[in-house]
Image 1 (cartoon, rainbow, N blue to C red):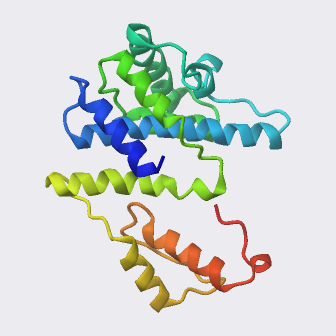
Image 2 (cartoon, helix red, strand yellow; image 1 turned 30 degrees about the horizontal axis):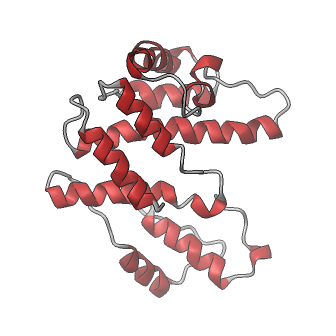
Amino acid sequence: MSIGTTIKTIQDIMRKDAGVDGDAQRINQLVWMIFLKVFDAREEEYELLEDNYKSPIPEGLRWRNWAADAEGITGDALLDFVDNALFKTLKELRTKATDDHGRMIGKVFEDAYNYMKNGTLIRQVINKLNEVDFNKKEQKKQFSEIYEKILKDLQSAGNAGEYYTPRAVTKFIVDRVKPQLGEIVLDPACGTGGFLTAAIDYIRQHFQSADVPEIL
């Protein structure tokens, strides 16, 4: 299933929830879910690389322990968990965390909000997100693709103040600029990272792989 189809399915699920009003709230709802899923994947890497790695997230609140199991907590129990345990604790990390990762999580959740009011629908959204594996290199572009898909929907509805530059346009411009190894690429109006991604692709295509550092 393509990422576009997955996001459309998630949007359709969210439309059934009385607490979510419009695409802007749907994208905000998705952001914190995707963040926790991606951070959990990164923590798997940290655990392999660092012998004494300790997660800033309490064990029971880590994505792997409450969201990863498709048959896990759902319904009213899930809604209560998200509103009264997950959000409450992660928001407190803004001031209580003693490490950079913890403070970052607290900052992300400082203005985050769980708009969904149906725990069964929350579980359905989570299970669809779990079909996307952000650990695979070829799927890392899906970060921007997810945002671009929702952003295009927002624009078509006429209720967004952000603008999406089509992939063909970013590729054309980067091909004309011809970025070189060692140069700094700046996208001052970076939204989905389309220009930066196109620049990375250009460099990887035009230079020997041994000369290109691991970028992402």
